[in-house]
Image 1: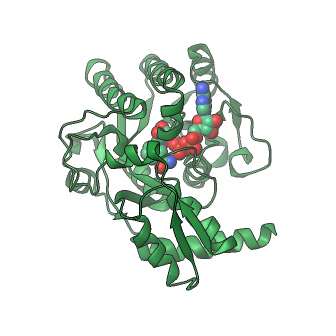
Image 2: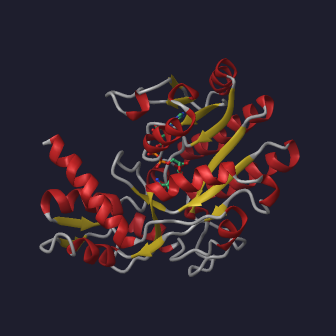
Length: 319
Ligand SMILES: NC(=O)c1ccc[n+]([C@@H]2O[C@H](COP(=O)([O-])OP(=O)(O)OC[C@H]3O[C@@H](n4cnc5c(N)ncnc54)[C@H](O)[C@@H]3O)[C@@H](O)[C@H]2O)c1
């Protein structure tokens, strides 16, 4: 059985990817790692954990060698809104961290997953049914690092035969760990506030349509892609994937079906609004569907029902 490493494992995705990988490959086979040492017992600490800073290649090399890691899910990165506040640090983490990881993957013949983003598109990209292969001229530091990351991953795949594969993830909705400072965080915050206070003030305009996905589908996509037959992959870094797209007012209406007195109002943050306005409204994911049989299960109504039920139960227990 192979050993896997997850970097940035304490974040929104890692908190759920690590348990999903451990359920599949065995607890001892999945090494969680992060620059932050987990402060409380949680899913990430229920198994091997390494304190690891991806901007230090020697730390990566040492952990990969010691555990004989075969596959890496490289999640450590700075997200869109925080990257815009600290662009130099974002470049250092998102690019140098990725380069270090690719170099170690080349040396030790590891397979690798790279999470790109819809942030890799920009204002000159067609915003409706955004094609797989299209203009990518993002205007944010986050987007710049994601496009450059896609190119660097493809370079390592072609030049050094590193088996690196990626997804352009949309905004992710989940109830285990809070989001880490992205433009789509509103679609998670809204559920916490709806359950607790029946009221939410949204930082995006009511009519801002963006691609979104429920975490179980995103995890399924990552695992499926990494297990796909390489002979079928015409693309690598990175695949468009789509599950649902909606506006804040549409999501509020869906929540109101379960919490009729829920109220949403708006206090628009110009920085995050500008980022959202440069992203696709909907995505064409035919390449993922045909090359590795991508098939999401959750639409907006199934996701909303599950979020309210699972998060509601958790917040009740925490009281
Ligand atoms: N969450 C989303 O909606 C979304 C959407 C598209 C793409 N992505 C991508 O998926 C990846 C993971 O996203 P997330 O939402 O889990 O992010 P997050 O911000 O929740 O977590 C990132 C983790 O990386 C860790 N980290 C920071 N600096 C580090 C370093 N130097 N070394 C090691 N770890 C470090 C942080 O402590 C944190 O736990 C990122 O590459 C992100 O760009 C996320």
